[in-house]
Amino acid sequence: MYFHSVTLDENKCMGCTNCIKRCPTEAIRVRKSKARIINERCIDCGECIRVCPYHAKKAITDPFEKINDFKYKVAIPAPTLYGQFKTVESRDHILTALKKCGFDHVYEVAKAAEIVTSETKKIIHKNGNKKTLISSACPAVVRLIQVRFPSLIDNILKIESPMELAAKIVKDEFSKTMDISPCDIGVFFITPCAAKVTSIKAPYEKEKSFVDGAISISDIYLKILTNLNEIENVEPLGQSGFVGIRWANSGGESIALGTDNFLAVDGIHNVITILEQLEDDKLEDVDFVETLACPGGCLGGPLTVENLYVAKTRIKKIIDEAKTKSTCTQCDNDYGYDLLWKGNFEYKPVMKLDKDMAVAMRKLEELERINRGLPGLDCGACGAPSCRALAEDIVRGNANETDCIFKLREKVRNLAVQMMELEGKMPPVMDKDL
Amino acid sequence: MKEGIISKEYVIPANDFAVAGEASSNVKKILIQLGVEPQAIKKTAVSMYEAEMNVVIHAGGGRAFVEIDEEKILIKIKDDGPGIPDIDLAMQEGYSTASDEIREKGFGAGMGLPNIKKYSDIFNITSQIGKGTLLEITVFFKVKEFIKI
Ligand SMILES: Nc1ncnc2c1ncn2[C@@H]1O[C@H](COP(=O)(O)OP(=O)(O)O)[C@@H](O)[C@H]1O
Ligand SMILES: [Mg+2]
Image 1 (cartoon, rainbow over the protein chains, first blue to last red):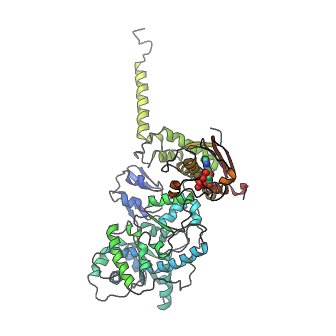
Image 2 (tube, rainbow over the protein chains, first blue to last red; image 1 turned 30 degrees about the vertical axis):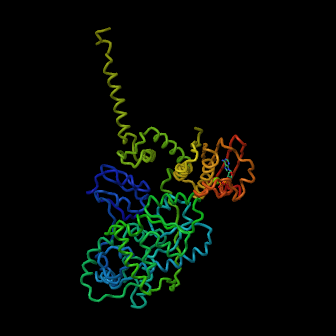
Image 3 (spheres, chains in turn brown, yellow; image 1 turned 45 degrees about the horizontal axis):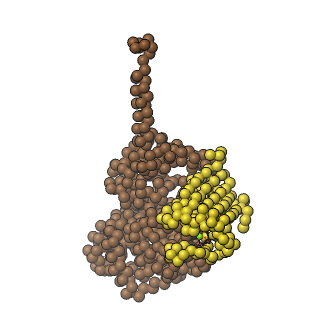
């Protein structure tokens, strides 16, 4: 079973080639004038949402009303939320306005990020410089590694995400202090991205997420905006230091680690280039690699409302504000949680042509033979992202050679030549020239 | 094509850093499609990439011949470059004759040949001064066939 947040709105899809060409795992094909997502390949990076000119790709998130399923409702906003507002007095204003949407409490994911940072430092210290560690903060990248870079699975920093930790802290703390059952507490992540939604509904690192739902920043934005104008008492809900807030930016997680020896890369295609280099052992001198699927990091997430570059300026103000406050930034894991992943995280060989290697080898030869006969224009008119992808679809039994318009034309033409030839032939009984 | 063997041939360009590494990148994709074990892919990727780069940097280009069967991958990297006068010396960690210019590009750490040896299961190198160099790298797909440690 595959759950994906990224889905298609059939009515809006024109069947064009924009998304198939940008998908980093070649997970989309056009069939009957509609894009089809191949579930086992999709990593929920949201690239297709970003490039679709018709807004036919969307991310499934939870409706706001879902919070009413719980007695006690808690919002855990991604720090990216802070970059979405123009004239706002302080972070506490945003958090108070968020709470007023209908939550009993708000706990910052940025705060949990600081705890994750201090745990990460310990892991890096223990690792020495044996191997380059890859951040697991972006679930789309983790899934990309799982399907395309299996030899890098060992390099993933297998630590709970700030979102998961935040939800766990909320449930533990409130069930204790308020004396309510953890199952009566609904924790909702205010998300900038689709991949996080998938990691809540279908986590790869554990059985079940601590988070109960995900509400997109774009869905809740108006509500917060309205509340911002009506705030009377600003509550001191901002607990995180600037270090945690900065995680919204590309490089934020790395800088927090206090090592110079890091590399931060954003945008899924740039991430792939860096992962290739890691696979070739070209970056053995780097201790930590922060890889974020969205351009600019989470601030560039597909479910945000503000333009990335504008949001960067906005969040800088919030970061500066946090710097002037004396909130602790070196947050230790006072809770004593074991933050390492418990579940088995395994390679998903979805690109493999057959489970039997001998058959896979024959299919590969066939694939390359077919590919040599294709025009090599990668036009996408067949519904596959490239000629090679069409050849692959053909050997997998999912497409035909005549799906290629050039191949089709070639066949029609040959047929026409044959017909002309036949037309010139006359049965001997009718032939007057004999 | 021999039955049960996939053969590939790649041209390795001289001094062209932009396309260097394409052959090994290509081979990686093939191995993923064949469903080869991640560890074997890693070993192949590193050793083939380093061998390819040596041909780009030190030998003015060459060719890669790849043969894949169900058990293993055999990579032969051949060039008609200057050859290696002292192979034992070249195999030492940190030994490099790369120019400062190459070093500035981040190459020439002298770890290429030692790493190829480390990551391959069978490794052969032959070289003739003025004629060229031939590297033969074998990586087995299953751990049980792992010969060298
Ligand atoms: N194909 C080759 N042709 C000629 N010389 C080579 C070749 N491969 C390696 N060498 C020599 O061996 C040395 C060590 O190679 P290597 O360990 O890969 O280190 P590096 O490439 O960083 O210099 C090189 O500096 C070069 O002098
Ligand atoms: Mg070298």
